[in-house]
Length: 288
Ligand SMILES: Cc1cc2nc3c(=O)[nH]c(=O)nc-3n(C[C@H](O)[C@H](O)[C@H](O)COP(=O)(O)OP(=O)(O)OC[C@H]3O[C@@H](n4cnc5c(N)ncnc54)[C@H](O)[C@@H]3O)c2cc1C
Image (cartoon, rainbow, N blue to C red; front, side, top):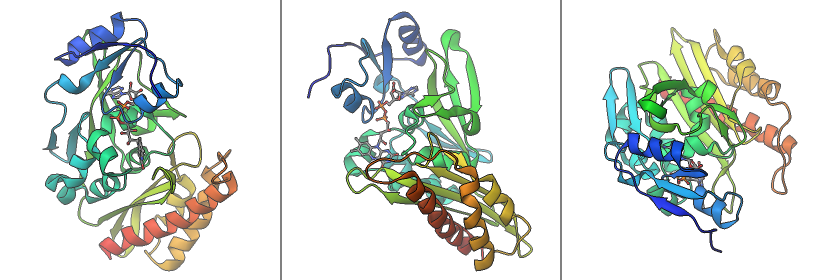
């Protein structure tokens, strides 16, 4: 399978890339190409020009920035999974990255590309919603803004990015004492994408859960927060009964589940409940 013909640009700065994206009709950024190129080969996407971000320096760094980690948009999944600073300060992020696809996908695919693509079956968006990440973007005229993960993911393959805007970095809070976090997925056997993925972040203080956030991907058009399950956890001891009660609440936030030949909507909601319980048990186990 071949793509339709396209022009190719390789800018050396973010400003140049944004200029191209706002001035060349039908242009699209390309990072790792592991979502865009397959879509182009299937003619689902037919950009007239590709603006390759790979020649822009400084977008692949991972830095500790006070209470958060700043991860450049071009950082590959493999680099996130292998990073000592990520493993020490936000282990659930390294564990999530390590579960993406296969070694080829992890060595080419980037965190900025994954978030911008906003595939409901992707792994990062689910964690980003649970952990409270922020997405840094730059647009025309060098205008920078920061979008919370809650606002960034709008719907199926749809984000809060405006035309010509590029994701430059993702900021993720570091885990603190008393916090545990886990990401669990039911892998599609052909692609490794998440049929359903669940991220759980919990805080335990004085023998009770004082905060909980749960992200659920693969069930609806975008990664969701499981607010009812989170509410069922706060103030409760981190026991099996608490986890079971939270698991029963998951369906409340998953209306209009998507279904396909592999997994019906009903099955996806069931998987979300099961994986939520497993992720919570793992997260509480880290702090108990
Ligand atoms: C066989 C296979 C298995 C996979 N399995 C999984 C899996 O298990 N879990 C998972 O989460 N993903 C999986 N993926 C997807 C993979 O993680 C991709 O790498 C990722 O979705 C896109 O990242 P990319 O850098 O390749 O982006 P690209 O394909 O280059 O771009 C994707 C989209 O984002 C836009 N874009 C790219 N970078 C930016 C930026 N900085 N700012 C704004 N827009 C940008 C592009 O224009 C395009 O629309 C799989 C892919 C394949 C081919």
